[in-house]
Image 1 (tube, rainbow over the protein chains, first blue to last red):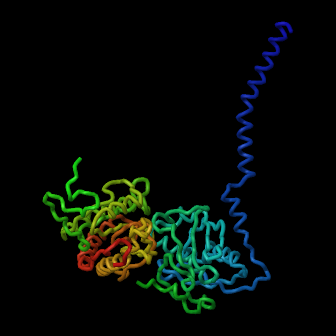
Image 2: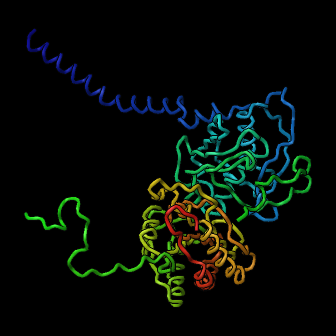
Image 3: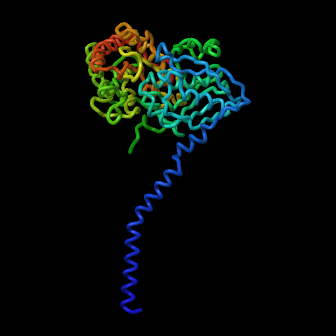
Length: 234
Length: 234
């Protein structure tokens, strides 16, 4: 190879390097963008998998009791009857009622859980401990404070108590992890009593005052409030 | 080394030949110190309201007023923070747990609740987890003090109910994380709320809250009898 050809070859290689240097960042951006479009986040993927707890048309419609805030006293809870086709499987049933609780009542002012929170998973252990795994929004969007955090947990526990008798205790996880507090105050390292008749210590109890059922929502809530729904005894 | 008769192996141990001072009797009763805990701080502002109201700032101001009211009643007072720091839950409990004859008061401003009301919280029953050696588990340090905490909480809540219309007349139970690791009578006091339009609305409440806590503590003082041993119920 003479010097002339060598020069041409080197010039060609240099041109390839320059073109690659210009094109590579564009290619990188393109790959990243397409990856973002095609691959949902881990939490989105879990939501898609777990929120699918569709009602089976064969399941009978029942009056489920949902514990949202009372319209008379925002710090108290009030049971509202909602027609739902609930599964007989306790895990599916728990998912259905918790998703309904998260969806909120007609009057959004009476929500007890943030609108952007989602149930990621629900498990039921053989000893009757229900494990509810919520998205991070449950912690970041629940108003900070002892009263508001207690109300959020109570609404979950009482709704499960009223509709899924197999659940005796409740453990709340955030994005699959145990966290110290819900939003800075309420202790989530502990178990909460769900079924006060069946649950055995060691557990923590809960104790918000309970308001009577709202007018027009009496059918399922007409039954006497369970013992757990009374203010905590001291 | 030459052993005297009394020092022979197997000989009974005799009193040392130098004068001894009898140790002071261990004081098992008596309220000696009040630990005040302005919640949050540092990077954790706590509840946030309109016009930049931050719970962490407000509770620090409230703490100074409560401290003054308690010192006027003759109580010794310690604070878990005096500036914009954020000690951990355990560090805050450690300060109280290192004292003999302490009570612990953690101060909060909520996001919710009827503005102008104040609630006092104590823990629900905790499992007592004393080990064989009588050493109480740190995670359940409050277990032996729950009854005293509720008595203390009732005394303070009674005073608050007289000053702030709409406040409950008795202490409420809630699983407040800060209280669980505190080995002394311990309560949380929460004012409503950061949702007020003007910070001055909360500032006006503070002297009344401080006075109620001081008077409640004075009323509780005769009931203050510490558990005889760690892990025993008072």
